[in-house]
Length: 240
Length: 209
Image (cartoon, rainbow over all chains, first blue to last red; front, side, top):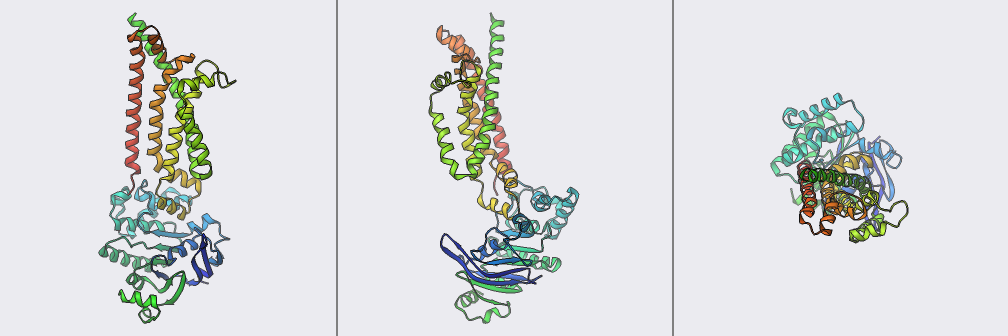
């Protein structure tokens, strides 16, 4: 059973069609990259997955159950979410940001602390140095590491990434991509990863779904992607 | 005479502070929840902000005049004064609570929702803390003006430092006017300084990335 499945999903807002007839299956342990240009509807697809939005037609299944049947709060805490840059709470310390969902879930304080320290270690930020800092005292790359740690905190089986490394300089971006791969090997999460960066898609994806004007143009593996002959795919390949 | 004056100043200052304190407590208790309500119900916005803005434009002496004949609320004495002061203090508190909440970065709110916060967790853990600085700024403005406006309380038997001022004006006695005005001004400065300090502390905490 796929962990995430889009069945003929369309989404409209104010009469404007953002996504139409999307079919996707994300299998356990894989990273499906949604590659597309701005306005292709890829962020909307993420929001349909964790119940921030609901499809106008069709349905999105998470662990076999429609997002409409999930308790909306449970569903969101069940899925880790990493957003570009601004996702951290500016008035929370690093430790409090990372421990957010476990605390919402009512974990014992000691378990939260241990989890936070472990994760900070995992993302390469020594807790003794960083747990008390505030987001504004971190570099962009460090903030993004904290964002990843926060998404992993309550050990969700599914992770959503919304252009998480888009605002970083190329060197930092590469570091974080490598770390993503390491974490992926260690935690074996199922990820849906949105990006407009074709190199990132090739590097991180188990499969790539190319989104174009709200439809899935093609789904393929990174190895086969350079041979795809559709117009959008050729444009992306030209960027390699 | 001198000892008399000092004990009068202390007594009337005490009355004044009590009037201001009670009024501000009510204004905060009413204004903040109303501000939160308005921030979450855009439809209530125009009505609530409109009404409180209109109240703000009524000259204070006239407002006392309107309130006196109203049964239960009105009459002569401190109760009427408190009601009028609350009405005046309401707008800055309500408006700043509203503005503070709606100007929290929408991306931060969205991320809170995406993490699975309920709407009351969003309010208490994210929106209110990030709006705190703006809310305190409203309380500060309200407090400073209330300290000044409360001097008019003496006109309807509400006591406070206005007693000196009205007496001084009536008997053309500058010393009496100053005996009321100076302590009131000092109170306002202290309140302004204290709440301003709090505001700056909070702005360090809530400063965005």
